Image (cartoon, rainbow over all chains, first blue to last red; front, side, top):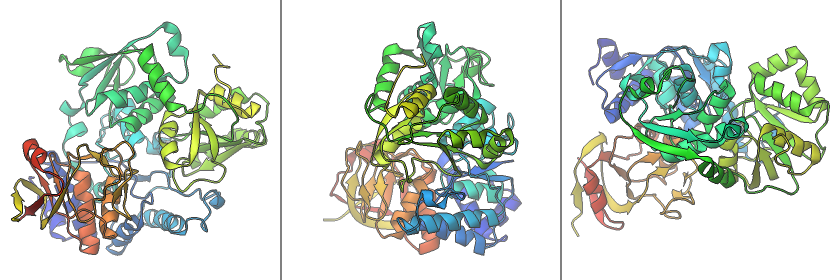
Length: 416
Length: 132
């Protein structure tokens, strides 16, 4: 790679050991991707602050001791811990993880990160990069949302690489940072009846299909008439769960795809047809249970937005959930502040809904109340949780989840 | 038996000699490898149940999550990591995990990128030499 004087000084350790290791990691990243130069970044959303073993704490302590500072505004991804409800994951049950996760939260705040603790930072002004900005993302749904829905530019940087980029303020110019790397390379043409577009689970299931069939290509969805930001969040999360999609286009919806030709750069690319049979297969694979008793409902993967809370309120009406069903909704501190402002938090709590902040309910160690048969409206949750927690999943739309929580057993199709 | 020398592009310097574990598919480390034992736990992976500890792991690459560097680094910290990695494409997440573990704990895990036919020819159990 071609280094500027400043970059060479960073690599030589002139600015200290933390900057040196960060720069070594960035140069290695450049060499692995074939980049020849760096590009400055303006924003970072990092996952290094998420506990994944003693190494993550040792690395953070190393940065702190070596006097690392951050070159760009840097926001934290979700943690293992809900600081407002420490008993969600009791320290006595998994002391290393809980102690380590708390220490990580302290260190990254001390390093100067903004305390976002959310996998959906883009729901807030300060965590929302603008079109064309060069940035760094790590959490898979956020990477895909930044690229696809906002037109900001990032590859998916793993733990330790993300904060390294934020320390040196640059990344190798490669992949989704370049115009060429962002062009769609596989078209997914929807061949569905009009009624299919009213199904609230469509974006989730479509995302699963994209992830499974896109491989390392940049998929272009053609034939989806509209999509809200919550829909794009669902597609982004699901496609990065079942596969490795870091960016997708929706023709007529996402900012770099006003037309199909814009999305592909006018090139002829492979077309894959998506029909009801394909979607139905993916839907069935997400749901181990479609009837029977229910122990919990988990919503908010990725973190629930204020518009999703509005839909939840509407679906509940003035009813309460069955007391035998634990209903947990994960969201960010910022959305919670908005709920309080609107007086919705009290209403939701009175209806039997438990808010969970800063974390997610599918991460191990298992959260209190998440056991047995659990229903979710998130394909990402439904895909990951059975492997990570000892539970059975039922998957359905938000209205199905709410009706089931009220009935105390799985009911599907009420809202259709 | 004289170990066969693997030549390719070194992404992380070092040298290692040992027994090959050949993985037929990319491995998702986060959720797919237990770093405290080195055992592959991804039930969808063809080599589930095998241990990467002390092996020269030959695989097309890693798959999935941003947790990849942390899991590789943690396995190396625990002494349950691979002795070296042989890949067919540059994988910066694996380089990051090995480089951080090397800096923090003095472990060694050279990473070399080879042509696909070189990778295909590597068989589990054979002895190879990687690096300088």
